Image (cartoon, rainbow, N blue to C red; front, side, top):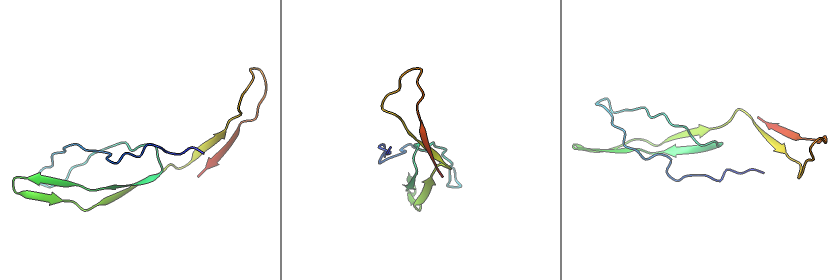
Length: 87
């Protein structure tokens, strides 16, 4: 069974300037995982500290395939390749 092993504690840590409207869009690519990410943001300014509410992002795949590979295959021989599709 393949397991995801890369779960970074901090996914993104970069300064993003926001205008007077107080918002910004930051497009990111999430790791290839089926998981739930929680994000919290804060900002500092000459007038004080700002805190944004925590948001959650659920990442998933519409389907994925698991292959059962044989231990060894000889060239020119026929073998069975079992595949399971999960949705």
